[in-house]
Amino acid sequence: MVVGAGLMAVLMLAACGGPGGSADREHAAEPAGAHNRPVPSATQGADEDGREDTTKAQISTFGLDVDTASYGYARRTLQEGRWPAPAEVRPEEWVNAFRQDYGQPPGDGFAVHVDGAKLPSGDEAVMRVGLQTRGTDAAQRRPSNLTFVVDVSGSMGEPGRLDLVKSALDKLLDQLAPGDQVSIVAFSDEATVLASMTPLTAREELRSAVDELAVDGGTNLESGMVAGYEEASKAFRTAATNRVILLSDGLANQGSTEWQDILDRVKEHAAKRVTLLTVGVGRDYGDELMEQLADNGDGMAVYVSSQEEADKIFTTQLPATIELRARDAKAQVVFNPSVVESFQLVGYENRALSAEEFRDDTRDGGEIGPGHSVTALYALKLKPGARGQLAQATVRWQDPDTRAASEESASLRASDLAGSVWEEAPVRLQVDVVVAAFAGYMRDKKAFGLDLSTLGEHASRLATDSEDPMVAELATLIEKARSVG
Image 1 (cartoon, rainbow, N blue to C red):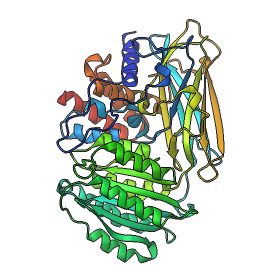
Image 2: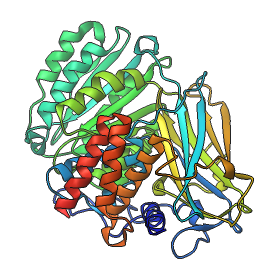
Image 3: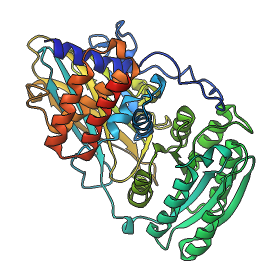
Image 4: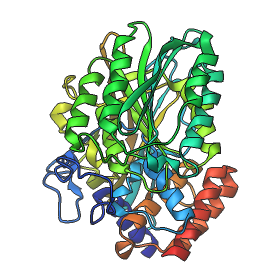
């Protein structure tokens, strides 16, 4: 009984968010509108704990998000014996960083998976909505125009920043196809185009441009982004995937440091089908700016702290996921008020939409590539004797080329819930619950219902059951948090 209540408390905590802003950044500017992010539609009319009474509102709607930077940066801070800032902990990014093993759809849309499990208290449960796109062979994808915008400011001189970026770029050049083209822009006090859009048949010219990357000056992020998008726009190919890839620590201190100016430019180019990937590096990292850039640029944000992680992203993930499967993808979950007394979505606070925006195709959603999975967890309180359909989950997206909208749905009945989250639920669902609970603890440990020791025990057991090195690493991180906290 106590464990169930504690787990529900932490899932709600992770969903509602923790206190405070991000840690002070000596060189980072305050984002325009940073404290005016949208309120999740699922919490309108909610009780004081943020849980929605489903007799008043039955719908949860949000834009999809495949960012993982929050987990990557928190992992580094913990490994270094530091505590991540609460505002930098986004639970959905922690969960989405882990493998899910959802079945793939036969076509270019989504497969929708819905499952869940009861908590020990009996009237509480966790529900998981899993969305999966079909993977692709890198050799079969359409050609790409990639513009790399590389931060070479003084702060990038720290070991593990620019040297890591240069090594990753060199390896990526070996992975791209002959039909691809690459441009390289470096920025510090000003932006410099080191290579205009160059076909991969001229790899040596591109390698020479990578070799030219050298640390110097301040961080004029605006200048770099403007030059990068100019290069991408000049070389835009309708039949290709056009993407800008920003590699930076995100600590802008020159040029326009009013973030909204930069975000508006990024959003304008995203509307013209030039998407953005932000790759964060460095011990001190402008997490919020890089995350907002990715959101406004119809892309994703990742963070790398080691050569192994960089190689994985640039030599394995990026070549296979450059193109898009879906634009403006959104999810909507409708709960049955006769079965569900209240619900709370874990995370996705800054991706929240109103119910009416779900089928408004002018409203921005998330851009999803091949082979990506998106997971959303809900903490539920069930009505006594709950029977029948519990919820229906629907994903809506637009074709990347034609903008034609499609939908796919799946539902879950109360009888489909596993009887016990720790004893009967699928291993991957258990892992997701532990990850979300750990993220909640990182946001506000004082309000946490379960102790880290218990979470660590579950993580260690699941590492053995799943034979997944990331889950083993999770157990190590939980133990590290115990010593740091």
